[in-house]
Image (cartoon, rainbow over all chains, first blue to last red; front, side, top):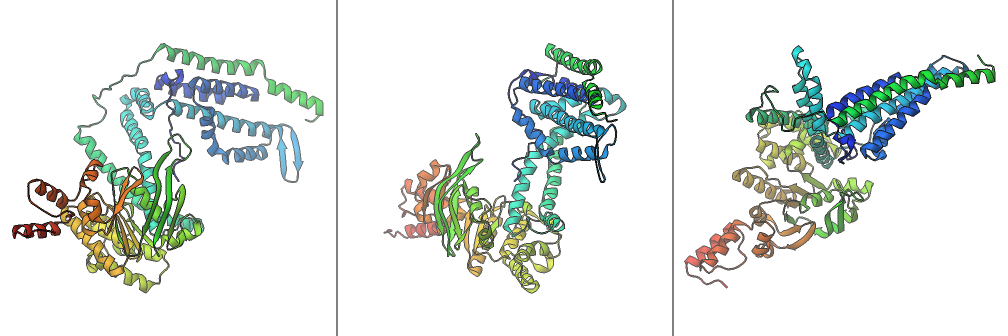
Length: 284
Length: 286
C-alpha cells in the first residue's frame, strides 16, 4: 500500500549534475526559483521549461521520474487553473455568460500559475533525484553554518533532517506490519464515512506513535553512548569542496536569469499578440 | 474442513527488476486441530507463507482456501479471515487501546458479537493466557512488561476463538521460562478450543515438543514435510541448512558416537531420559 511513495527519492547514476557540490545545487535551485518568478511573458516560460529539459537530459535522470513528481498535483493543477480563470478579472472580457466571466488576464494568470507550479516542482525534484539525502543535508548545514554566530542551530537541524529521512522507510514498513496485525483482528479500514474511517485508523496510528517515541529514545541513547554531543568539533570524512564545474553551473544559471530578463524586455511577444488581438477583434 | 494451499507461488514486486520469488509452488494442507511446526532459515519464506493463510497477502498464482472460502476472492476472504487468528512476532504492532480489557475486546467487537459474549470471551482469554482479570483488565497495555504484553496480544487473538491459530515466532525474545510458559499456554488453548495451530519458530526444541507435523522450508520451497520423528532424524540435512536439530537429538547423536547404544528417532528430552535410563538398566532397545 505504501510502496508507491517516492519521497526524496535518489536516482543513482553518474552525471555532471550528480557530481555538483550539494551547496551549488541548493543555490542553483534558489536562483532557478528566482528565474521562474521574474518570468512575466508566457513564451519565456517555454524557454525555462526547455532549460529544465536540458538539465534533466544532462543529469541522465529519465524524464518519467520528473513527471512522476508532477503527477500528485493532478487535482491541484486543474483546480488552480479554473480558480484563476474565473476569479481574475483584468484585461479584455472574452466570455460573459450569466455569472461566469472569462478575461484575457484570467487566461494568462491561469496558464502562468500552472506553468510556474510545474517548473518549481520539476526543479525541486531534479535536486532530490540527483543528490543523496545525506549530501543534501550536509550541503544545508554548510550553507547555514555562517548563521551559527546568531545561534542558528544549523548542525542540529541538519541532523534532524538526516534522521527523519533515514526513518521514513522504517516507518512505512512498520505501518504496513501494524496494519496487517489489525486487519488480522478484523479491523475494517475501508467502509463507512470519513469520520468512521478516521476512527478506524486509530488502532494503526497509536502503535505507530508509541513505537516511534520508543525508538527515538533508544536512538538518542545509542547516539549518546557513542559520545555524540552536537556539532561542535565534529569533522567529516569527506569534506565538501567547490570545483570548476560548480563555477560553470553558476555561470549557466546566471545566464538563464539574464536571458529571461533580456528576452522578455526585448521581445514582449505576449504584449504584441494582445495588441494584434485587440486590433483584429476591435474589443477593448 | 481444512486450510488447503494449492500450487502457491508468490513474487514480490512482480514485473520490476527487483522481482523476487519468495514462495515457489507450495502445496500444503492444514487439517482441523492439527499442530503444524514451520521451520526454515531466515528468508526461506516462512513469514510470507503464513500471511497467505489469512489473506493478508494474495498468491501471485495458485490458491488458498480456508474451510472452502477462496482467499483470492475479496468477499470470501473476509469470512475466511475470521476463522484464522494471527499472532505477530511483536506485540507492539498490535496493542493500541486504553486498557488491556478494551484491547482484547477489539477483535471480538469486529466480529460483531454482543456485549455479554464479548465480556465472557475477554475473561476467558485472559484466564487462558494467565493474566489476572482484577489486576490487569484496567491497566494500560503500554505499562506492561514484555511478557505481559505478549500475553495480552495473544489474548486479543484467542478471544476471537479462531479455528486456526497462526503464530509467528511467539516466543522470540523471551527467556527460557517465558518460552515454556507461552508454549504451554498455546498447547492449553489448543486443547480447550480445539483449534489447529501453525507455529513458526527458530527453536527446534519447541517444535519437537509440540508439533505433530513439521514443514521445512528452504528458499521458498517445501524441502521436507513429515512427523517430527522423520524430520529430526535428518540431523545432517538440517545442520547443512543452518537449522540446529533439537537438543535431545544432538545429544543422542554424540552419545551414540561415544559408544552408548541408543535407539534412533529421539528428539524430545523426555524420550532421551527414558532411553538413557533403559540403557543404564542394561536393556537392549529394539
